[in-house]
Image (tube, rainbow, N blue to C red; front, side, top):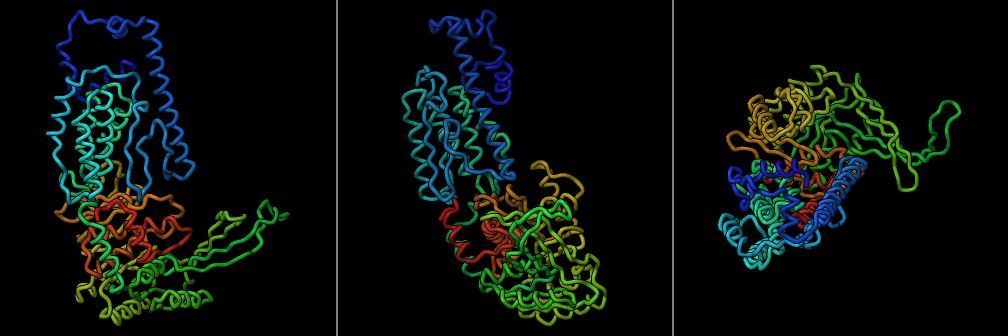
Amino acid sequence: MDSRDSQSIRRQMTNPLDPPSNDKKPDQEPAAEKASGSSGLSYDDVVKMQAKDEAARAQADAEKTGRAAQMERSGGQASQPAPSALSPFTYQMGHKPQFQIRKAEFLHEKLERPVADLKPLVDKFLKETPRPDEHGLTADQQRELEATREMLARVTNADDALATALELAKLYKHLQYIEEAKKATDLSLGIDPESHLGRELFKELEHLHLPEMGGAGTRPASAQFSKARLREKIQGLAAGRVIVVGDMVIDEFLEGAPERISREAPVLILEHVNTELVLGGAANAAHNVTALGGGCHGIGVCGRDSYSGKLAELFEVAGISQGLVQDPSRPTSVKTRILSRSHSFRQQLLRLDRMSHQPVDPAVESLLIERLKQVAGQYSAILLSDYRGGVITDAVARACSVIAAERGMKIVVDAQDRLDRFQQVTLLTPNEPDVERAVGFKIDSQESLERAGNKLLLLTGAHALLVTRGAQGMALFRPDCGIVKLPPFNKQEVFDVTGAGDTVAATMSLALATGCDFVEAMALGNLAAGIVVGKPGTATTSQSELLEALEFSDLPE
């Protein structure tokens, strides 16, 4: 082991078995000589053992680098690694985790520590980590945790003590009891400071903080609700009714089979195979509401062209009533994607947008506001979906807020810029880059995330702020309530993130309209987003898919 690594470990963690640094005796032998003298090994044997240890670390680094390269090739999405000598803790989502560690996976040499020396350390650990709150764990999780703790209390040798301490640390980490996981890792390194898995786990836990896991103390955010509670909320979504106001878009997919390279220019010639039109932008948010069983009315602008009729037809097919205002000075917003299909693989080659970004004129504003007033009494929530297409002007935003306040409606805003123009709304749902632009600084730590969330709450006076963070999940801010963070429930492979923000905003709007609190609404939005990112293109989800995903989650029953 490199001396600098050894010094680093000592600086980061106190080993309960190490004497204080100021007690070092001047006549202590060098490490190699001491090892040789105490075990009967020659100097050459010791050198060989150190070389073997360096080779094991090099192999670990190589596998780690290989996994990082695989993530980069797959677009930054981590796939489930295959079980190996360096990843004994892997498990599939929806299945009971198996934390079975084989000694060969972490021991360089057999540990010779007398178990009597370890007993005080084990007893101290068990005393300092009392049984966790059962309300946050399933019955299986409680049994597995208790069985592992009892196994640790009964170990008869140092090898088993190390294996069980590491098993317990990983189990605590999986259950999101981070302080307990850190203490179990301390114990493993107290048993064997050279443990490669113990050191790696320590590095992982260094970057996790209790506020990141949500909830008070060591309770995870997911412990604030159960499967039974969320199942009831999902089944109640059909009672919700939401008005979606915003930039209604058609997502057009033109698909062709590659034929040859053109003689006119070095471009690919595609033979047209299929054209598909789906609802996009604010219209996709509206479609997500009806797909979940809720009622929805869409208000927006279209042009006086061939696509305006197609937009109305798509609304009808999706079960969305609409109050579209025709504006002959603007095109109907269409985003056309040209795709090449070869066998079962589709590759997007080009996207062409037909969309005006100019604010609608005052006459159109008045018509939009009038159509909102006509139907507001029949709905319980308004969702503003701003794709910078000119519909959500300051006047329209203010009118929506006034109408919602007069009728006691929830108002949710999913916008990309100028977030401070939305004042006193029920919920804002920006993504992290949009928040960074709004507050003027980068979010690169837990402290900066909290600072950004609290600053945006002050700027807008919003009742709640949900920051969507991609693979890092979601963060919910409320005045005087602290931050609640939730990792993605459904950690499947991401196929396409198109429209995932629409799904979150629509699901949470419907959830709030049917009586969910903010944390429950966040959980449902999290579930829904995890489903749609596994589908190609602009997609929606349903109650049945939410219920199925819920059953495969790690939430307590």
